[in-house]
Amino acid sequence: MRYFISFLLITVSVMLFGCSGQQSLQSTDTGNIPDWFTNVPKDPNFLYAAKTATSQDLQLAFDKATTDARVEIGRQVEIKVEGLQKRFQEETGTNADAQLLDQFTQANKTVVSNTLSGTQITKQKQVNDGSLWRAYVLVEYPVGAANQAFLQQMKKNEQLYTRFRATQTYKELEDEVKKLDDAKKGQ
Amino acid sequence: MMVSRFFIRFMFLCIILLGLAGSLQAQHYPDWFLNPTLIHCTYSISGIAEKSYLSDSAISYAKNNGLLQQNLNNGIIVHAAASYWGTEAGKYCIWRTYEETPYTTVTNNQDFQRQTRKIFINENLVFVLLVDTVCEASGSNVQSLDVNKVSTPQWIESIPESSDYWYAVGIAPKYYYETSSWSQAEQEARKYLAFSKGISIRDVTKVSGSGESKQVLEVEVELKNIEVVARWRNIKHDLFYCLLRCPKQ
Image (cartoon, rainbow over all chains, first blue to last red; front, side, top):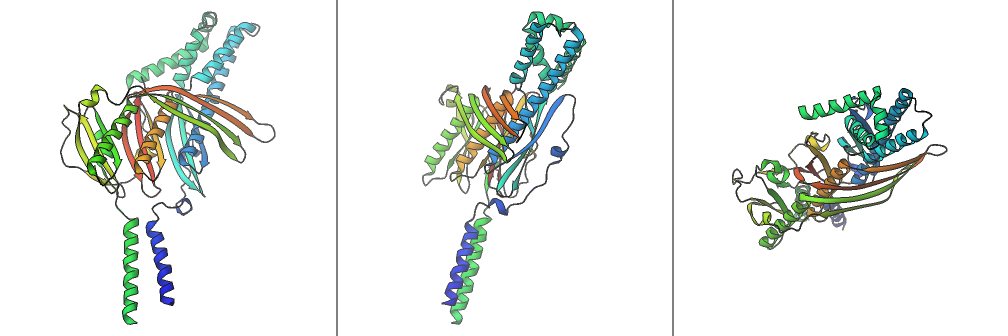
């Protein structure tokens, strides 16, 4: 009887081991934080955002992390365009021109909501975090593309564009767009 | 008594060996399925189906599945939307939708000119390679790869970049039917291609008191001429990966 019970127990445990095709999350290894997450790359031609998120579903963890990263990039673009707006006001002295300022703000808003075309995940990593999946992502966005979209929006308003063309900010912006075009041709 | 002891030991050994054999089972895949760019043809499609008692049926089914996937890759309109709620305890998905609308039907003139070039059958699946009639795909011997022995490809963590193409990696867990896992990995990659092409995100963040945010994202883009660049299976974590690309212009 004793042998029979031992035999039964061992058989069941061996069968369970043999049939377990899928490893449980708890039993898998935990990875290290990727270097690019702690030291986010810096490049004058790109905006970067590194984010992390967790979920029981790996793909959802990646979805959450990339959404966060894109929101972060959207904020960076917004700050950049706000900086342009400030410089534009300073250069042209349009502080008192409420209508023109409003037009500029509208162009700014359109850029932030529309120009997030071109964001791309360049690095990603998944690790087990207890019973969850943790996804790390690095999303990049070419600055030239943001500038190009901004200029296109400005061109839609002739009055604003004419004023803007006379500024130093415009020249710098156009130089950056030209650099992007040259880089594309060179590739 | 002595005989029964030997018998029990023998049984233990057999069961342990069987268990180990089950857990270390090889997983072979044709190289043209894992690395479709190896096939230098204008058109090449890899189709898969679950193994069946009637192999002819499985092969026909694999061809059909391949054409269906190719139909999606030829051109789709992606509609996606999602909403997330961020709190200090973590980020939660409130809702999300994803829809793909293909441009054309499966049977078009191009498909009639395709021929079955290779068939491969592994432990679970039937693989079929369809190529255009004028293509001279190199070699007739099937090269199979055991994914247990292949090292993790670089593209899993470092996604390729190019000025001409968007690249995206899709991941899927193991489902009862392996074909579902491969198909979902491909769909997830298409979703990320769409997100790269154009995405609108609205974010409202409350910073006073407890931190809270709400994000809503919307996507509506067209994707054309999507190509499968590589596939890979992580046996350890039972995950399926697919690397896709589509032209930026």
